[in-house]
Figure 1 (cartoon, rainbow, N blue to C red):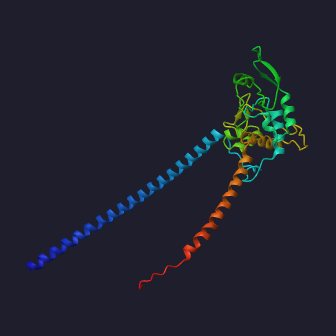
Figure 2 (cartoon, rainbow, N blue to C red):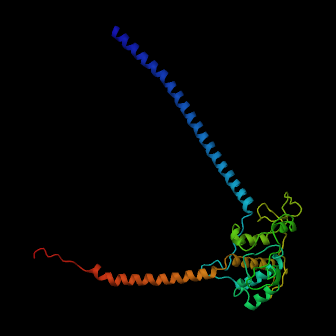
Length: 307
């Protein structure tokens, strides 16, 4: 009987411990499930926050880039951008005409001489005639005084202002940049200049432009001191091409592209010649290698171990 009572007590304690452990385990498992659900929610919120932050940072970078460079310019199919493409010299001549009649009153091209135009857009006689139309201050003479003389081929294109202060005074504080290297000095070069010249429009609702400035979304900040200069039939081309706004923009950009890189055609031609010569040298080297080494590579060596 004593043994039976002891056994019953042991069984009761075991059953009691199991009944106590079971709810504890269920409570722990439920707590763990809640913690996992909470951590999953935190992870989801963290991922959402990271995505929103990335989107905001991307929009901030895009807006900062637009503020720095203006509206992104379209990519235009310039005919001289191909590997073996050359400049449209008729377009360069028309572009020089646009520069002379529209741009030269404010913008200089201090790195271009009249002789640079010979063989590119004008004959030597035409370039000499253009140079003779300007007066150049030269000297000193034998008496130590400066004098004026007619221009010649070695003279640079005339500058509209004597110095930067005079240019700023005449343009309300804005300084018209020199156009000699403008397609190299600006972001997206040719596309930017063309988009800027043809991109003038009325400011959208909610944007006010102060007096003396003009709205152009392609200019950094959107407000530019230069008014719209290219209008249909603003010039009369010598070759009879219709002088539309887009045509004048294309021609003057072609002229400015040549001015910034006048050696482009010679460089492309020289590169093509070198590639052709190196290709011939490669073929000759391959043939010589095959002729000289084919006998040695195809021969068989027999080792006579007996004798």
